[in-house]
Image (cartoon, rainbow, N blue to C red; front, side):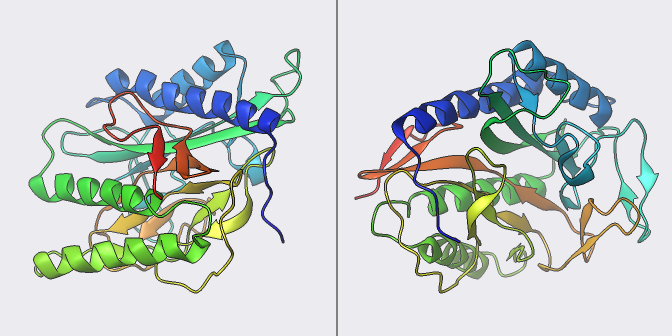
Length: 292
């Protein structure tokens, strides 16, 4: 399938959606502390999106039961918010109550409806903004802080490849080089890139072409101004293998039980680089990245 080129009007809708998704991540930060449940975080984010006239895109998407994804420690992605800790189908913990030392990814996607009067009890037609961030709960170990830092830098490395004339494959190839170089400098604590999940095109659909993998690949499709997609590398503290919970069919665990970290931005290809549609105020990178 071809990669969609967004019109000027569509890009403006994407900017609105991206700004709100970033705003929700900023809003939720004070609530992320020891003793809070991921279900409470879900409700706060859900209500905030509604107040802003937006729909939480994960809700009922292919049956996903909540409005955000919350992935703690060894949960790679698609963690389902809950009110209590549980044991997953493979025997690994599915944590829901935040504890001192945890690292947690909160993944937000909103839909800005085309119709301002849309019934937000139903999924509306509209444009999406998708972003995620790692949060640290209390006193986090240096090893987990490093994992989160490296995962964020992997995202930024990928973003720096985005410009007209580059290829989709350039993004993952650069990320893999960064992780390999990092491992050479830290041979006792090697990280790996998750290969089972990837970034994706985004617009009036949650997931569009292209699929943006985060490791070396030969996707030679050329990036053009107006393309829009996410970059969202998932970096494991151990091996790259993952398993999916057989009961809920969503929760993704690291295969070896070690922790994982992920950051995500929605990116627009511009004439000389990219625009970060989901940029948060605490980030030091520019909204308009000149990569030429």
